[in-house]
Amino acid sequence: MLGASGEAMAIAVSRAGGLGSFPAAGSTPDQIAAACAAIREATTAPFAVNLFVLDPARPDPVDVRAAMDRLAPWRERFRLPPQAVPNQWAQPFDEQFAALLDIAPPIASFTFGVLARERIDALQARGVFVIGTATSVAEARAWAQAGADAICAQGFEAGGHRGSFLELAPEAAVGTLALVRLIRRAVDLPVIAAGGIADGAGVAAALVLGADAAQVGTAYLLCEESLIAPAWRRAIEAAPDDPTRLTRAFSGRWARGVENAFMREMRACERDVPAYPVQNALTQELRAASARDGLADAMSLWAGQAVRLVRPGRAADVTAELWGDARAAFGAAARLADGRGEFPA
Ligand SMILES: Cc1cc2nc3c(=O)[nH]c(=O)nc-3n(C[C@H](O)[C@H](O)[C@H](O)COP(=O)(O)O)c2cc1C
Image (cartoon, rainbow, N blue to C red; front, side, top):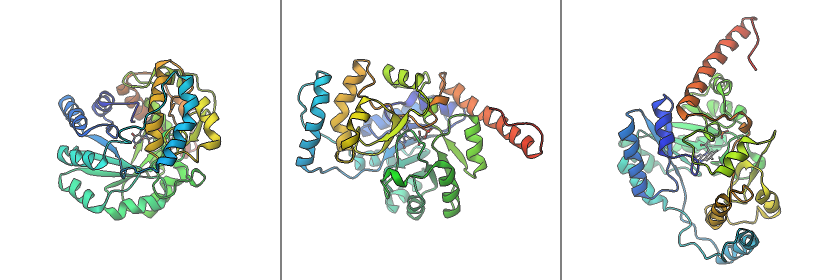
C-alpha cells in the first residue's frame, strides 16, 4: 500500500505466514534494492514487490496550467506558495523494472497496466512469480495472454487506486463477488480476491468463491506498522457508516477513500483533471500540507468499503486473526450446511 505501508509491514506479514508486499511504485531503484535487502535480512519467508505499470507522462502544458489554477485556492488555504511545475511526474518505470529484475524478489505484482510478454518472461527466467491486477475479465485475459502466473481480481470495494487499464469508467466497475467468479471461469490461473475483505469471514468467503488467496489492504491501515498520518488514522477510527467514495480529484485515477472536503469540492471538475500521475504530482504538496497541519480536509484518506471493520493492533496479530477467524467461519459454514448452528455475526 503505497503511502501507507513499507518494509516493516511487509516483514511482519510475511513472518506471520501471510504474503507481505513492499509498495515500490514511489521508490527509486536504489530504494527498492535497499528495502528488499532489509526484508531478506529480516525473514526468509516469501514476499512480494509491487509496481505501477506506467508510460512516461507527457501532459499538454495547457492542461497542466489549468490543473494548477484549479488547485491554487487550495494551496492558499494551506499557506503554500504558488505551484511550480514538478521536475518529475513519477519514478521512471523502466528504471524500476530493471532494478526489480536485478533484485528478483520471490513475487512481483503489478497494477495500472499489463506488462509486455518479454518482461514477464524475463522475470520468470529469474524465478520471479508474476501477479497481474485485473478489475475486469478483459484485463484478466490480457494478463493471462501476456504470461502472468496469477491474477489479482480487484473488485469495486477495494481501497486506494483501482488497477484498471482497459475500462477506466467507475460506472463499469465490478464487485469482488462477481469478479472472482467471472475471472475464475475465464482464465485458467490462480486468482487472488481483493476488495472489501477485512475480516476472517471475508477471507473464508473469498476462498469459497474459488479464489486461491485473499488480498487485504484496508484492514492493515490501523496497524502499528502502518505509515499513515494521524489525521488519516483518525478519519478511519471515526468513519461513519458507508464513508468511502471513488474520486479522481487527488491523482487523476479513480481511487476509493473516506470522503473529505477536497473530494466534495472537486467533484464537479474531477473528470477534467489530468490523468495519473500528473494530477497526483500536482496535489502532492497540498496533501503533505494537510497532513502537516493535522487536517484531513485535503489529504487522500484511501480506504475500502469495509473500513468500519478495521481494528488496531500489530500486523502479525491482524494476519493471525484473519486466518484464525477464516477457519472458524469455515467451521460455522460447514455446520450451517449440515443444518446445525448459525453463522457468527
Ligand atoms: C492505502 C492504500 C494504498 C494502496 N496502494 C496500492 C499499491 O501501491 N499498489 C497496489 O497494487 N494496490 C494498492 N492498493 C490496493 C490494494 O492492493 C488492495 O487491492 C486493496 O486494498 C484491497 O481492498 P481492501 O482495501 O478493501 O482490502 C492500496 C490500497 C490502499 C487502501
